[in-house]
Image (cartoon, rainbow, N blue to C red; front, side, top):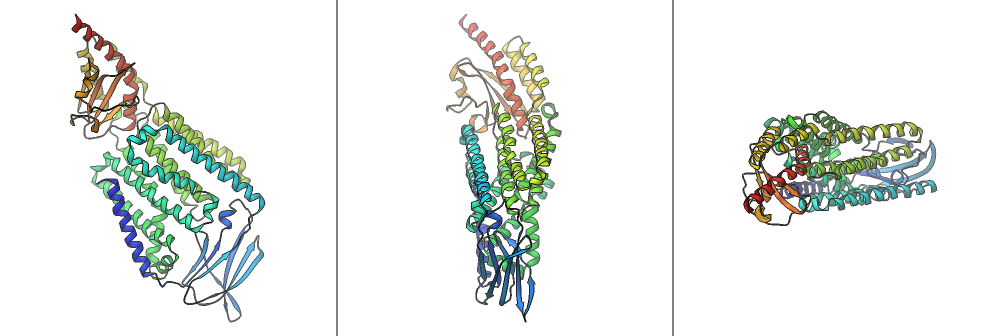
Length: 522
């Protein structure tokens, strides 16, 4: 089933559940919500402001427990009566308000907060940095515009990623509607990326046990998303669930926090890496790849520890989603020299997170700088290690091809080498004498210069899964290498291997092409 149809089904289910819960909770007005945007507007302020709620009972004050809810502090299942709100900053009472809770409607009270002048400057700086991060990502998207247009299913998550970056700033956090929009976009983005990766995980499709585990995790994730997102969108729903279905709500909170889309996506990448059986080309990089994915899983779990802290969670969550999107994009799109520069710069951009930590936790400036330096270098080591193809395989193959005596021997030897190295079912090598001979094998369309590995939808004979272009100078089709998989798609590193050998193989193919032309002329 296509991703769009699956998204439509899951969104429809969510809308039905949300409508049902909205109907059930329409009269659930017995709650108190105290709104303050201090944590959002003044995220750099180190003065500790605490809000206390008391209920007046026979000239005594009874402490009423509250919990954070977006920009609010809430108390559910609240009794009718008189209440006292106290605001203390550094244990000094700064504000006091007397309010009354009626039976017919919830009590909502807004505490106005005037940010400090220095915090305004900090917010300007931080929002400017976020804006630059958005521009940087837009520049990367422009760099890969050809790849994006060929992978049109990536356009929707790209729009969501950009919106998530835009909505991650201190001005948005103080607006409940925009905060809810941010969380809604996050849920849509997570669901889409999860379905996209699942659809691309060919190695996992035939493993019944792993599929059962993934389905269980998906159901846990989806239940958590539906219930918690409904509660976030409407306070009445949250109040209704706390009063009537508290146990279900607690389970949903656990699912929502610890079994999110990114954790499942990274787990699928990890399982894909573990199940790779083709050792000839990529055996040197598997351990580094596993270590990198494992480190991302740990990072994703650490981010969840800050879920109730606006000044950390929103930014960490945004960076997490942006990075995972680019990780998915780069493993799915064939690139050459661009990718190393891009990934290194992406890690450098993660310095944004660490700058944020340094600003907010100035006591740990030295530790933060050292930690960020070590982390960035560690990630650079992992990423360059996972993108490196063993040069021995390339040199050995090319040397054998140079030693061939004629085109038939070249085709035969190349076919044998690729079958052995990539464990392919069939390999067929074609050398074209005329420029338009490729039209007998490929669809007649304009092929971009950087389209080296063509997939099944471009090949007329559907027996083959890939066609690798051999090209030289102004001739875009010296020849083709047709590849038939052994029921398993080529992994990213194997495509890199093919891309790296193409240029030198094209020189050998060009030599034999000239020999054939000379034979025909003579």
